[in-house]
Length: 242
Image (cartoon, rainbow, N blue to C red; front, side, top):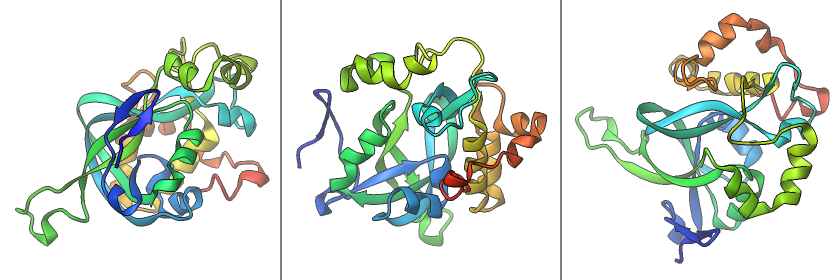
């Protein structure tokens, strides 16, 4: 099939497109199968993998947090999660397929990101129980760090003004000064990855960083453990409880 066109730039189609399915790579709340199913009811074949050469970081404000009234501008706890290239980076991700027909909706929902194709080690296909077996890779779409220019080119100045400027945000991807994870969303991510067991939880806590690219989420939560008591509003309880 023809490649997906993103602002006139072709990007490689990930695995399974011949059968009308695309692979999605989840690295935050989507590490929970329940959360992934909530976001993508038609998804199939949920499993884990490893992504190398990238880093997870809470470094950009997300308009959805303002819309849902869970952003705390006074403490700058407004950040969402993305990935960015990082030599030596390696962490656990989720892999699953969604129908190709749902890809435009995926792009719309993840509006601020650069949706990129990444190569992931598919744990379910690796080795077949043989530790010396070959590593099997699969390509999937992931939400990577974007640019303000990309957002404006794709969605226009009016959407930027409505979703960001109106909330006191001048830049999505070049936010000046301290920016910390949205409390409700961070708790949601931790509850989600906890469902995958201690190894995946530890990987998330130790391989996810604040805006400074040095402080881990484990350290952040140790300094402010009350984050894990930050209940979402009742209307969002099902959406933000892992």
